[in-house]
Length: 505
Image (cartoon, rainbow, N blue to C red; front, side, top):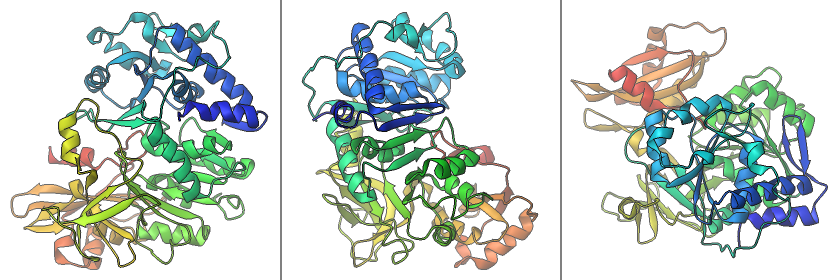
């Protein structure tokens, strides 16, 4: 079992079906498989061997998508890097991953050039995929020139061979490279196909960064089914709405900020979006206010996924979304979940504790860090570091991320509870609550807010409104900041840590 065999199969049995749409290019499976084979053979010709690591510093592009499948055929390991890394962080991760080749683009070439002298990578192994070329890089066109589109040699890849490494950090703290095997990604193919009702006729749109792990949640089942995958260069809500209507998109995955943008777009009508069978929210909790608005706009298409790149997840099915409002779903087949206290003892339904789980998408470990692996995985169970509870039916309710919890005056304060309240104010588009140091309380909650277009409200008015409507006195915010935009990761996630650090000074 290996991921690369999927593309070979679709080229044989669905050669004329549209497999990939990117910009003006529309490739059927036969044509796309030819490009995949060409790159796989080019990498072999360049001396890249099984298990060696190829890093990318790329925006969404056809070359990146091609690489994802090429390594699946020739046995290298793909390591997607965030273009938002600083040079020091990038160099740290490239070294940690034992990188032998780097693919980048014109827009990110200066970042890669800044670290070249610090790395022991052959000068011909820095590849630029666009533009006319740069002195310190070999061009992608030169890399693949002369390589055949025939299937690369069968090197006997098995399901336990490593397919990719996804880094969870690098800007701060120690690098944690999360390893996924071909087996793990095969489970993404089959389990998510079932959970999200993919078929060979499905049309998937991916509009966020394809380098983060959440992208694989729809990428893998789309290609597994021989369906159509549309990739946008970057998130553009105007293009999202136009593409859904024009291409009759059936499946889309979005982070909460993107869903909020969709809900507030004037052209996002039920008529234009009627082809959608799934809108999946992941990456962060979607507040109830937005879930309710989405259900009004498009009844019966909302799913939510709670999960960690390390490999545990729950899914809220579209048929349970209204009945279990506020839940992030239940375990899919072959997964198990527990709620534990600080000593690892199981808690009863309704009791709040750490979310612990296991299943077939679990990582084999952190790359070269058995110590970190042992700290996260105990007796086969992943301790997530997140806090929640299960109801009597086994549905998970996420209380908050453990790392985001605020301890104010000795009381645990969960930002999500305050965010749920603030989001109900008619002027609020987005809200992020986090803790700041306080001489009196240890920490105190602060709310950062983005207002809807045309809305005017003072920070003081908003603070008074939130504090009058929260359920408990310890949830009152000490400050409201009105911002034009939030700092976000390449995946579109709101980065509370950056706001917290900037305000803490």
